[in-house]
Image (cartoon, helix red, strand yellow):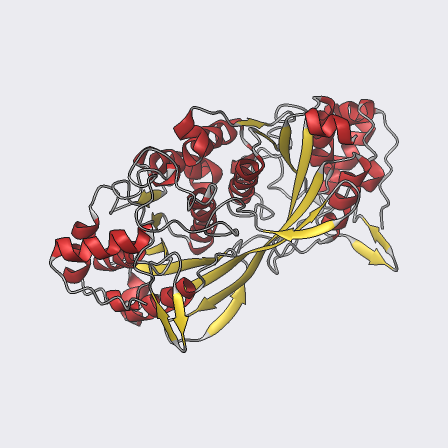
Length: 249
Length: 249
Protein backbone atom coordinates (compact mmCIF):
# COMPACT_ATOMS: atom_id res chain seq x y z
CA UNK A 1 0.00 0.00 0.00
CA UNK A 2 2.78 2.42 0.89
CA UNK A 3 4.40 1.99 -2.53
CA UNK A 4 1.21 2.46 -4.49
CA UNK A 5 0.26 5.45 -2.35
CA UNK A 6 3.59 7.11 -2.98
CA UNK A 7 3.27 6.83 -6.77
CA UNK A 8 -0.47 7.66 -6.96
CA UNK A 9 -1.99 11.08 -7.34
CA UNK A 10 -3.35 12.31 -4.00
CA UNK A 11 -7.03 13.15 -3.63
CA UNK A 12 -9.27 14.31 -0.77
CA UNK A 13 -12.44 12.32 -0.06
CA UNK A 14 -15.18 13.69 2.20
CA UNK A 15 -16.08 10.80 4.49
CA UNK A 16 -19.07 11.08 6.80
CA UNK A 17 -19.18 7.43 7.78
CA UNK A 18 -22.43 6.89 5.87
CA UNK A 19 -23.19 4.53 3.04
CA UNK A 20 -22.76 7.07 0.25
CA UNK A 21 -19.38 8.45 1.28
CA UNK A 22 -18.01 4.95 1.94
CA UNK A 23 -18.97 3.98 -1.61
CA UNK A 24 -17.41 7.18 -2.94
CA UNK A 25 -14.15 6.34 -1.16
CA UNK A 26 -14.17 2.87 -2.73
CA UNK A 27 -14.62 4.48 -6.17
CA UNK A 28 -11.70 6.88 -5.61
CA UNK A 29 -9.56 3.95 -4.44
CA UNK A 30 -10.45 1.95 -7.54
CA UNK A 31 -9.37 4.93 -9.64
CA UNK A 32 -5.87 4.51 -8.17
CA UNK A 33 -5.85 7.71 -6.14
CA UNK A 34 -3.98 7.91 -2.84
CA UNK A 35 -7.01 8.83 -0.75
CA UNK A 36 -6.84 11.34 2.11
CA UNK A 37 -10.18 11.19 3.90
CA UNK A 38 -11.72 14.11 5.78
CA UNK A 39 -14.48 13.96 8.40
CA UNK A 40 -15.97 16.83 10.41
CA UNK A 41 -16.88 17.20 14.04
CA UNK A 42 -19.37 20.06 13.76
CA UNK A 43 -21.62 19.42 16.74
CA UNK A 44 -23.79 16.87 14.95
CA UNK A 45 -26.19 15.06 17.26
CA UNK A 46 -25.39 11.59 15.92
CA UNK A 47 -21.67 11.48 16.60
CA UNK A 48 -21.36 7.76 15.99
CA UNK A 49 -20.79 8.63 12.36
CA UNK A 50 -17.28 9.85 13.29
CA UNK A 51 -16.42 6.40 14.64
CA UNK A 52 -17.91 4.86 11.51
CA UNK A 53 -15.82 7.17 9.29
CA UNK A 54 -12.60 6.06 11.01
CA UNK A 55 -13.55 2.37 10.63
CA UNK A 56 -14.42 2.80 6.95
CA UNK A 57 -11.18 4.71 6.29
CA UNK A 58 -9.12 1.96 7.87
CA UNK A 59 -11.00 -0.81 6.05
CA UNK A 60 -10.23 0.81 2.70
CA UNK A 61 -6.54 1.46 3.47
CA UNK A 62 -6.54 5.22 3.07
CA UNK A 63 -3.30 7.21 2.91
CA UNK A 64 -4.52 9.34 5.84
CA UNK A 65 -7.72 10.14 7.70
CA UNK A 66 -8.43 13.54 9.26
CA UNK A 67 -11.12 14.86 11.58
CA UNK A 68 -11.55 18.64 11.59
CA UNK A 69 -13.42 20.20 14.48
CA UNK A 70 -15.60 23.15 13.48
CA UNK A 71 -17.03 24.71 16.55
CA UNK A 72 -16.24 26.29 19.84
CA UNK A 73 -18.37 29.12 18.52
CA UNK A 74 -18.79 31.91 21.04
CA UNK A 75 -21.40 34.58 20.46
CA UNK A 76 -21.16 37.96 22.15
CA UNK A 77 -24.34 40.02 22.13
CA UNK A 78 -24.59 43.82 22.07
CA UNK A 79 -24.66 43.93 25.87
CA UNK A 80 -21.55 41.77 26.18
CA UNK A 81 -23.44 38.58 27.08
CA UNK A 82 -21.78 35.42 25.77
CA UNK A 83 -23.23 32.11 24.62
CA UNK A 84 -22.10 29.01 22.76
CA UNK A 85 -23.76 27.84 19.57
CA UNK A 86 -23.30 25.88 16.36
CA UNK A 87 -22.45 27.82 13.24
CA UNK A 88 -24.85 25.44 11.54
CA UNK A 89 -27.97 26.51 13.40
CA UNK A 90 -31.55 25.65 12.65
CA UNK A 91 -31.25 22.01 11.59
CA UNK A 92 -32.66 18.86 13.18
CA UNK A 93 -29.13 17.41 12.88
CA UNK A 94 -27.47 20.11 15.01
CA UNK A 95 -30.25 21.66 17.10
CA UNK A 96 -32.98 20.46 19.40
CA UNK A 97 -35.48 19.94 16.58
CA UNK A 98 -37.19 16.54 16.27
CA UNK A 99 -35.92 14.24 13.52
CA UNK A 100 -38.95 13.34 11.37
CA UNK A 101 -39.95 9.68 11.24
CA UNK A 102 -42.05 7.42 9.05
CA UNK A 103 -41.74 9.36 5.82
CA UNK A 104 -42.98 12.72 6.90
CA UNK A 105 -44.80 14.60 4.18
CA UNK A 106 -41.80 16.71 3.20
CA UNK A 107 -39.84 13.75 1.98
CA UNK A 108 -39.25 13.38 -1.76
CA UNK A 109 -40.97 16.65 -2.42
CA UNK A 110 -39.27 19.86 -3.46
CA UNK A 111 -39.47 21.21 0.09
CA UNK A 112 -36.26 21.50 2.05
CA UNK A 113 -36.20 18.93 4.91
CA UNK A 114 -35.60 20.05 8.50
CA UNK A 115 -32.55 17.79 8.45
CA UNK A 116 -30.93 20.16 5.92
CA UNK A 117 -27.90 21.74 7.61
CA UNK A 118 -27.32 25.29 6.32
CA UNK A 119 -24.63 25.38 3.61
CA UNK A 120 -22.97 22.28 5.05
CA UNK A 121 -21.57 20.88 1.81
CA UNK A 122 -20.29 24.34 0.88
CA UNK A 123 -18.32 24.48 4.14
CA UNK A 124 -17.10 20.89 3.83
CA UNK A 125 -15.96 21.34 0.23
CA UNK A 126 -14.24 24.63 1.12
CA UNK A 127 -12.23 22.91 3.86
CA UNK A 128 -11.52 19.98 1.54
CA UNK A 129 -10.19 22.49 -1.01
CA UNK A 130 -7.87 24.01 1.61
CA UNK A 131 -6.57 20.56 2.51
CA UNK A 132 -6.20 19.59 -1.16
CA UNK A 133 -4.12 22.69 -1.82
CA UNK A 134 -1.92 21.91 1.19
CA UNK A 135 -1.42 18.32 -0.01
CA UNK A 136 -0.89 19.23 -3.65
CA UNK A 137 -4.06 17.36 -4.64
CA UNK A 138 -6.20 18.42 -7.63
CA UNK A 139 -9.10 16.05 -7.04
CA UNK A 140 -11.89 16.07 -4.45
CA UNK A 141 -14.54 13.38 -4.03
CA UNK A 142 -17.96 13.95 -2.44
CA UNK A 143 -20.80 11.44 -2.14
CA UNK A 144 -23.71 13.79 -2.82
CA UNK A 145 -26.78 12.30 -4.38
CA UNK A 146 -29.44 14.31 -6.16
CA UNK A 147 -31.88 11.42 -6.56
CA UNK A 148 -32.67 10.65 -2.92
CA UNK A 149 -31.81 14.11 -1.60
CA UNK A 150 -33.59 16.29 -4.10
CA UNK A 151 -34.65 18.68 -1.33
CA UNK A 152 -31.09 19.54 -0.29
CA UNK A 153 -29.84 22.53 -2.29
CA UNK A 154 -26.19 21.56 -1.81
CA UNK A 155 -26.64 18.06 -3.26
CA UNK A 156 -27.51 19.31 -6.75
CA UNK A 157 -25.14 18.88 -9.71
CA UNK A 158 -25.35 22.62 -10.52
CA UNK A 159 -23.99 23.42 -7.06
CA UNK A 160 -21.08 20.99 -7.50
CA UNK A 161 -20.14 22.43 -10.91
CA UNK A 162 -20.35 25.99 -9.61
CA UNK A 163 -18.25 25.12 -6.56
CA UNK A 164 -15.60 23.63 -8.81
CA UNK A 165 -15.28 26.89 -10.74
CA UNK A 166 -15.16 28.92 -7.53
CA UNK A 167 -12.57 26.67 -5.89
CA UNK A 168 -10.22 27.04 -8.86
CA UNK A 169 -10.53 30.82 -8.61
CA UNK A 170 -9.94 30.69 -4.82
CA UNK A 171 -6.64 28.85 -5.02
CA UNK A 172 -3.24 28.85 -6.65
CA UNK A 173 -4.70 26.70 -9.42
CA UNK A 174 -6.65 29.73 -10.67
CA UNK A 175 -3.51 31.86 -10.86
CA UNK A 176 -1.04 29.26 -12.04
CA UNK A 177 -3.25 27.51 -14.59
CA UNK A 178 -3.88 24.38 -12.55
CA UNK A 179 -7.10 22.43 -12.22
CA UNK A 180 -9.31 21.31 -9.38
CA UNK A 181 -11.89 18.66 -10.07
CA UNK A 182 -14.81 17.86 -7.78
CA UNK A 183 -15.93 14.28 -8.41
CA UNK A 184 -19.49 13.44 -7.40
CA UNK A 185 -19.75 9.90 -8.76
CA UNK A 186 -23.06 9.09 -7.04
CA UNK A 187 -24.92 12.20 -8.04
CA UNK A 188 -27.31 10.51 -10.44
CA UNK A 189 -27.48 7.01 -8.92
CA UNK A 190 -30.34 5.52 -6.91
CA UNK A 191 -29.59 4.09 -3.48
CA UNK A 192 -29.92 0.57 -4.89
CA UNK A 193 -27.41 1.37 -7.65
CA UNK A 194 -25.00 2.84 -5.08
CA UNK A 195 -25.23 -0.29 -2.92
CA UNK A 196 -24.78 -2.62 -5.90
CA UNK A 197 -21.69 -0.65 -6.98
CA UNK A 198 -20.25 -0.62 -3.45
CA UNK A 199 -20.73 -4.39 -3.10
CA UNK A 200 -18.74 -4.93 -6.31
CA UNK A 201 -15.99 -2.71 -4.89
CA UNK A 202 -15.86 -4.57 -1.56
CA UNK A 203 -17.40 -1.95 0.74
CA UNK A 204 -18.31 -3.39 4.15
CA UNK A 205 -21.61 -1.62 4.77
CA UNK A 206 -21.81 -3.08 8.28
CA UNK A 207 -19.20 -0.46 9.22
CA UNK A 208 -21.25 2.46 7.91
CA UNK A 209 -23.74 4.56 9.84
CA UNK A 210 -26.65 6.37 8.23
CA UNK A 211 -29.29 6.84 10.96
CA UNK A 212 -30.23 10.38 11.97
CA UNK A 213 -31.49 9.26 15.38
CA UNK A 214 -29.72 6.11 16.59
CA UNK A 215 -30.41 4.14 19.78
CA UNK A 216 -27.43 3.25 21.97
CA UNK A 217 -27.70 0.01 23.95
CA UNK A 218 -24.54 -0.81 25.86
CA UNK A 219 -21.73 -0.79 23.29
CA UNK A 220 -24.11 -1.18 20.37
CA UNK A 221 -25.28 1.72 18.21
CA UNK A 222 -28.55 0.67 16.63
CA UNK A 223 -30.27 2.42 13.74
CA UNK A 224 -33.80 3.64 14.44
CA UNK A 225 -35.06 2.21 11.15
CA UNK A 226 -37.65 4.95 10.79
CA UNK A 227 -35.95 8.25 9.97
CA UNK A 228 -35.70 9.30 6.32
CA UNK A 229 -32.07 8.19 6.12
CA UNK A 230 -32.85 4.71 7.54
CA UNK A 231 -35.86 4.36 5.23
CA UNK A 232 -33.82 5.20 2.12
CA UNK A 233 -31.03 2.86 3.17
CA UNK A 234 -33.34 -0.04 4.03
CA UNK A 235 -35.27 0.23 0.76
CA UNK A 236 -31.96 0.50 -1.11
CA UNK A 237 -30.74 -2.85 0.21
CA UNK A 238 -34.05 -4.48 -0.67
CA UNK A 239 -34.06 -3.00 -4.19
CA UNK A 240 -30.43 -4.03 -4.73
CA UNK A 241 -31.19 -7.57 -3.56
CA UNK A 242 -28.45 -7.33 -0.95
CA UNK A 243 -28.78 -8.53 2.65
CA UNK A 244 -29.01 -5.42 4.87
CA UNK A 245 -26.21 -5.65 7.49
CA UNK A 246 -27.60 -2.72 9.52
CA UNK A 247 -28.38 -3.40 13.18
CA UNK A 248 -31.76 -1.86 13.93
CA UNK A 249 -32.99 -0.98 17.43
CA UNK B 1 -29.19 50.80 18.96
CA UNK B 2 -31.50 47.93 19.91
CA UNK B 3 -34.41 49.53 18.07
CA UNK B 4 -32.46 50.22 14.91
CA UNK B 5 -30.99 46.71 15.01
CA UNK B 6 -34.40 45.10 15.28
CA UNK B 7 -35.77 46.90 12.22
CA UNK B 8 -32.59 46.65 10.11
CA UNK B 9 -31.77 43.84 7.72
CA UNK B 10 -29.19 41.50 9.24
CA UNK B 11 -25.85 40.97 7.53
CA UNK B 12 -22.70 38.96 8.29
CA UNK B 13 -19.35 40.79 8.25
CA UNK B 14 -16.06 38.90 8.24
CA UNK B 15 -13.91 40.66 10.83
CA UNK B 16 -10.25 39.75 11.19
CA UNK B 17 -9.35 42.67 13.42
CA UNK B 18 -7.26 44.29 10.69
CA UNK B 19 -7.61 47.68 9.08
CA UNK B 20 -9.51 46.48 6.02
CA UNK B 21 -12.19 44.47 7.79
CA UNK B 22 -12.73 47.22 10.38
CA UNK B 23 -13.39 49.67 7.54
CA UNK B 24 -15.71 47.16 5.87
CA UNK B 25 -17.70 46.84 9.09
CA UNK B 26 -18.02 50.63 9.28
CA UNK B 27 -19.34 50.65 5.69
CA UNK B 28 -21.94 47.94 6.45
CA UNK B 29 -22.99 49.88 9.55
CA UNK B 30 -23.38 53.08 7.53
CA UNK B 31 -25.62 51.13 5.12
CA UNK B 32 -28.02 50.53 8.04
CA UNK B 33 -27.46 46.80 8.32
CA UNK B 34 -27.66 45.07 11.69
CA UNK B 35 -24.11 43.68 11.62
CA UNK B 36 -23.24 40.22 12.91
CA UNK B 37 -19.45 39.95 12.88
CA UNK B 38 -17.55 36.70 12.45
CA UNK B 39 -13.92 36.03 13.35
CA UNK B 40 -11.98 32.76 13.08
CA UNK B 41 -9.60 31.01 15.39
CA UNK B 42 -7.83 28.78 12.87
CA UNK B 43 -4.42 28.35 14.46
CA UNK B 44 -3.04 31.61 13.12
CA UNK B 45 0.34 32.55 14.60
CA UNK B 46 -0.62 36.16 15.33
CA UNK B 47 -3.58 35.61 17.61
CA UNK B 48 -3.73 39.20 18.80
CA UNK B 49 -5.97 39.84 15.82
CA UNK B 50 -8.78 38.00 17.64
CA UNK B 51 -8.57 40.48 20.52
CA UNK B 52 -8.50 43.33 18.01
CA UNK B 53 -11.60 41.94 16.25
CA UNK B 54 -13.56 41.89 19.52
CA UNK B 55 -12.51 45.48 20.31
CA UNK B 56 -13.44 46.71 16.84
CA UNK B 57 -16.80 44.92 16.99
CA UNK B 58 -17.62 46.55 20.32
CA UNK B 59 -16.49 50.00 19.17
CA UNK B 60 -18.86 49.84 16.19
CA UNK B 61 -21.85 48.54 18.21
CA UNK B 62 -22.43 45.30 16.33
CA UNK B 63 -25.59 43.25 16.86
CA UNK B 64 -23.41 40.23 17.73
CA UNK B 65 -19.81 39.07 17.43
CA UNK B 66 -18.84 35.42 16.92
CA UNK B 67 -15.56 33.55 17.01
CA UNK B 68 -15.57 30.18 15.26
CA UNK B 69 -12.79 27.76 16.04
CA UNK B 70 -11.61 25.72 13.06
CA UNK B 71 -9.11 23.18 14.20
CA UNK B 72 -8.50 20.32 16.52
CA UNK B 73 -7.49 18.53 13.35
CA UNK B 74 -6.26 15.02 14.00
CA UNK B 75 -4.50 13.11 11.27
CA UNK B 76 -4.29 9.32 11.31
CA UNK B 77 -1.71 7.80 8.99
CA UNK B 78 -1.92 4.42 7.27
CA UNK B 79 -0.16 2.74 10.21
CA UNK B 80 -2.55 4.26 12.76
CA UNK B 81 -0.12 6.95 13.96
CA UNK B 82 -1.88 10.19 14.96
CA UNK B 83 -0.75 13.80 14.76
CA UNK B 84 -2.27 17.26 15.08
CA UNK B 85 -2.11 19.82 12.31
CA UNK B 86 -3.75 22.86 10.76
CA UNK B 87 -6.11 22.29 7.85
CA UNK B 88 -4.52 25.42 6.41
CA UNK B 89 -1.03 24.00 6.04
CA UNK B 90 1.90 25.47 4.19
CA UNK B 91 1.53 29.16 4.99
CA UNK B 92 3.82 31.50 6.90
CA UNK B 93 0.72 32.56 8.87
CA UNK B 94 -0.09 29.06 10.18
CA UNK B 95 3.15 27.09 9.94
CA UNK B 96 6.73 27.48 11.01
CA UNK B 97 7.72 29.39 7.87
CA UNK B 98 9.46 32.76 8.25
CA UNK B 99 7.34 35.85 7.61
CA UNK B 100 9.15 37.86 4.91
CA UNK B 101 10.39 41.33 5.86
CA UNK B 102 11.49 44.49 4.11
CA UNK B 103 9.54 44.06 0.88
CA UNK B 104 10.73 40.70 -0.22
CA UNK B 105 10.92 40.34 -3.98
CA UNK B 106 7.59 38.54 -4.29
CA UNK B 107 5.64 41.53 -3.10
CA UNK B 108 3.47 43.40 -5.59
CA UNK B 109 4.34 40.88 -8.28
CA UNK B 110 2.05 38.22 -9.65
CA UNK B 111 3.70 35.56 -7.49
CA UNK B 112 1.71 34.13 -4.60
CA UNK B 113 3.22 35.23 -1.26
CA UNK B 114 4.20 32.65 1.39
CA UNK B 115 1.71 34.42 3.66
CA UNK B 116 -1.12 33.16 1.41
CA UNK B 117 -3.21 30.70 3.45
CA UNK B 118 -4.66 27.97 1.21
CA UNK B 119 -8.27 28.72 0.28
CA UNK B 120 -8.77 30.77 3.44
CA UNK B 121 -11.32 33.23 2.09
CA UNK B 122 -13.23 30.36 0.49
CA UNK B 123 -13.52 28.67 3.90
CA UNK B 124 -14.36 31.92 5.70
CA UNK B 125 -17.05 32.88 3.18
CA UNK B 126 -18.52 29.37 3.30
CA UNK B 127 -18.89 29.58 7.08
CA UNK B 128 -20.27 33.11 6.77
CA UNK B 129 -22.84 31.75 4.32
CA UNK B 130 -23.88 29.05 6.81
CA UNK B 131 -24.27 31.68 9.52
CA UNK B 132 -26.16 34.03 7.20
CA UNK B 133 -28.61 31.29 6.33
CA UNK B 134 -29.14 30.51 10.03
CA UNK B 135 -29.73 34.22 10.77
CA UNK B 136 -31.94 34.84 7.77
CA UNK B 137 -29.38 37.26 6.31
CA UNK B 138 -28.94 37.77 2.55
CA UNK B 139 -25.85 39.98 2.70
CA UNK B 140 -22.22 39.17 3.46
CA UNK B 141 -19.39 41.69 3.72
CA UNK B 142 -15.72 40.88 3.20
CA UNK B 143 -12.79 43.33 3.19
CA UNK B 144 -10.78 41.78 0.38
CA UNK B 145 -8.59 44.08 -1.62
CA UNK B 146 -7.24 43.29 -5.06
CA UNK B 147 -4.96 46.31 -5.26
CA UNK B 148 -2.55 45.60 -2.44
CA UNK B 149 -3.08 41.83 -2.42
CA UNK B 150 -2.86 41.07 -6.10
CA UNK B 151 -0.92 37.88 -5.40
CA UNK B 152 -3.69 36.30 -3.31
CA UNK B 153 -6.01 34.29 -5.58
CA UNK B 154 -8.92 34.59 -3.14
CA UNK B 155 -8.82 38.41 -3.04
CA UNK B 156 -9.75 38.82 -6.71
CA UNK B 157 -13.14 40.17 -7.80
CA UNK B 158 -13.73 37.16 -10.09
CA UNK B 159 -13.45 34.86 -7.07
CA UNK B 160 -15.96 36.93 -5.10
CA UNK B 161 -18.49 36.94 -7.96
CA UNK B 162 -18.09 33.20 -8.51
CA UNK B 163 -18.48 32.52 -4.79
CA UNK B 164 -21.70 34.53 -4.75
CA UNK B 165 -23.19 32.34 -7.49
CA UNK B 166 -22.05 29.15 -5.74
CA UNK B 167 -23.39 30.25 -2.34
CA UNK B 168 -26.84 30.89 -3.79
CA UNK B 169 -26.84 27.39 -5.30
CA UNK B 170 -25.64 25.89 -1.98
CA UNK B 171 -28.47 27.29 0.12
CA UNK B 172 -32.22 27.62 0.37
CA UNK B 173 -31.94 30.86 -1.61
CA UNK B 174 -31.09 28.85 -4.73
CA UNK B 175 -34.19 26.66 -4.34
CA UNK B 176 -36.64 29.25 -3.10
CA UNK B 177 -35.64 32.12 -5.40
CA UNK B 178 -33.83 34.16 -2.75
CA UNK B 179 -30.64 36.13 -3.13
CA UNK B 180 -27.28 36.21 -1.43
CA UNK B 181 -25.02 39.16 -2.05
CA UNK B 182 -21.32 39.25 -1.22
CA UNK B 183 -20.24 42.85 -0.74
CA UNK B 184 -16.53 43.55 -1.21
CA UNK B 185 -16.54 47.35 -0.92
CA UNK B 186 -12.74 47.71 -0.71
CA UNK B 187 -11.87 45.49 -3.64
CA UNK B 188 -10.67 48.29 -5.91
CA UNK B 189 -9.46 50.84 -3.32
CA UNK B 190 -5.87 51.65 -2.42
CA UNK B 191 -4.81 51.43 1.23
CA UNK B 192 -4.79 55.24 1.43
CA UNK B 193 -8.35 55.40 0.05
CA UNK B 194 -9.48 52.76 2.56
CA UNK B 195 -7.98 54.71 5.46
CA UNK B 196 -9.48 58.01 4.28
CA UNK B 197 -12.91 56.35 4.00
CA UNK B 198 -12.60 54.73 7.41
CA UNK B 199 -11.61 58.02 9.04
CA UNK B 200 -14.77 59.64 7.64
CA UNK B 201 -16.80 56.74 9.07
CA UNK B 202 -15.23 57.03 12.52
CA UNK B 203 -13.09 53.88 12.57
CA UNK B 204 -10.59 53.86 15.45
CA UNK B 205 -7.57 52.36 13.70
CA UNK B 206 -5.66 52.25 17.00
CA UNK B 207 -7.83 49.20 17.83
CA UNK B 208 -6.90 47.33 14.66
CA UNK B 209 -4.05 44.88 14.20
CA UNK B 210 -2.39 44.21 10.85
CA UNK B 211 1.12 42.95 11.63
CA UNK B 212 2.03 39.40 10.53
CA UNK B 213 4.80 39.13 13.13
CA UNK B 214 4.11 41.31 16.19
CA UNK B 215 6.38 41.83 19.22
CA UNK B 216 4.82 41.40 22.66
CA UNK B 217 6.30 43.54 25.47
CA UNK B 218 4.42 43.15 28.72
CA UNK B 219 0.78 43.91 27.94
CA UNK B 220 1.63 45.73 24.73
CA UNK B 221 1.37 44.13 21.29
CA UNK B 222 3.67 46.07 19.01
CA UNK B 223 3.70 45.88 15.22
CA UNK B 224 7.01 44.83 13.67
CA UNK B 225 6.80 47.62 11.10
CA UNK B 226 8.66 45.57 8.53
CA UNK B 227 6.41 42.74 7.27
CA UNK B 228 4.44 43.29 4.06
CA UNK B 229 1.26 44.00 6.00
CA UNK B 230 2.96 46.64 8.20
CA UNK B 231 4.62 48.23 5.18
CA UNK B 232 1.34 48.55 3.29
CA UNK B 233 -0.42 49.94 6.34
CA UNK B 234 2.34 52.43 7.19
CA UNK B 235 2.53 53.73 3.62
CA UNK B 236 -1.27 53.95 3.53
CA UNK B 237 -1.40 56.30 6.51
CA UNK B 238 1.33 58.47 5.00
CA UNK B 239 -0.40 58.61 1.58
CA UNK B 240 -3.76 59.39 3.24
CA UNK B 241 -2.20 62.19 5.27
CA UNK B 242 -3.47 60.59 8.48
CA UNK B 243 -1.43 60.20 11.67
CA UNK B 244 -0.58 56.51 12.05
CA UNK B 245 -1.83 55.33 15.46
CA UNK B 246 0.01 52.00 15.22
CA UNK B 247 2.41 51.18 18.03
CA UNK B 248 5.59 49.83 16.47
CA UNK B 249 8.14 47.70 18.32
